[in-house]
Amino acid sequence: MAEMDTSSGGGHKKGPGVKKGKKLSTRVDLTPMVDLGFLLITFFIFTTTMSQPTAMRLFLPKDTEKPEEQNKVKASGALSLILAKDNSIFYYEGELAPDGSNFKSTNFQGIRDIIINKKRSTSPDDFVVVIKPTPDATYKNTVDILDEMTINEVKRYALVDIFDVELQLVKASGK
Amino acid sequence: MPKVKVPRKSTTIDMTAMCDVAFLLLSFFILTTKFKTPDPVQVTTPKSVSTKIVEQENAVLVTMDKEGKVYFSVADENKDQKSELIDMIDQSKALNLTAAEKKAFLAPGNLIGVPFTQLKSYLQLSPEQIKAFKAPGIPVDSANNQLVDWIRAATTAFQGKTMRMFVKGDNDAKYPSFKGIIDALKKNELFKFSMITDPEGVPPGTDLFKRKEAIGAKATDE
Image 1: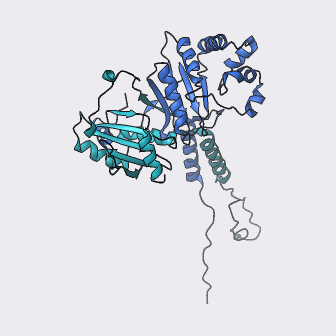
Image 2 (image 1 turned 30 degrees about the vertical axis):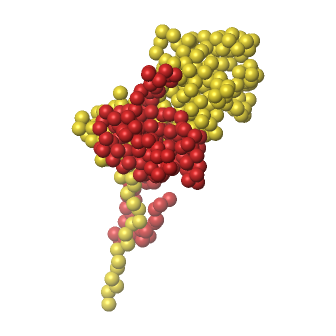
Image 3 (image 1 turned 60 degrees about the vertical axis):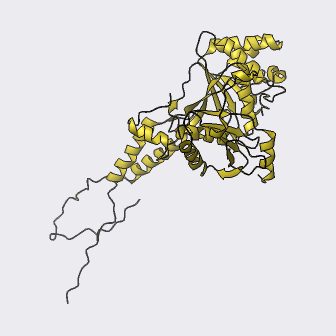
């Protein structure tokens, strides 16, 4: 027990033959109760779920073969994000330069500023983000980048297949 | 010389306050949490800022584990649709399932993660065997995307009701599996679906944060 007997042996006597009934303490030792309480707390923490899962909605565009039905994207307002291995992101603004000079690399910490900057510098009607996950990207990366669209209130974005040229550039950069 | 007596102090600590705190926390945890349901497949979902709570009714769930294996399941609440679904799969794929095998499909918490060729033998397994069974996953590659058939059967079974399509994926699942699921949905003209995520706070300073501040933190993604 977490209690030590510190009383100094019975206390003093009033005199010879005086017997006093020992006063019992009304104090209850709560240590076991505290132990039990915390044991139950740990049990509940480990066996229950705190937060309910939430759902994130995604709207897919309809695949269409006819070019006139496809959404036109102004090249200057486009920001392409390529999700690669090990949580890295490659991006370029507008169209990809033939020599790959505007093909830049970043990560999930830096991508928000890039999106914000691009959003500020382009007119809202032209701004569109194109997301291209490579086969090495994980599902988490995909959800994170879609989440980033919600966080930065990007109204128009698309999840599209990656081009071979971009895949080669990603490979060439060693990721 | 009189001896100076140092009064001995008791080492007993009053535990009442601590006891109060412990039980306060305990009641808090009991009231705010709910028990974990044992998942047949371990999936750690990614975090997102979404605030929409997942609803169980009329839900069709596609699960993707960390190796990218794909599983298909229908909410336990929808027994009629489930039995209709398995009848349809049975007919279209000519699997000759018996009534007992169809009943096995209706078992609560059942996740289908086998190709059609193995479906019959999978449904013959006992609950103990299922626990030890290592499912190969439903094929979702572009050459053989069997999830298309599952989802087609589900959309037919849920006709007249609003079907909620959910995708629950693991953090480490690779994108090609997810792409296979998207393709399967697209082929069935299902362009809206939800991804199950864990809630996360909105990072301060961003546009969404500012908007939520402006309308008093009531904003949910519509």
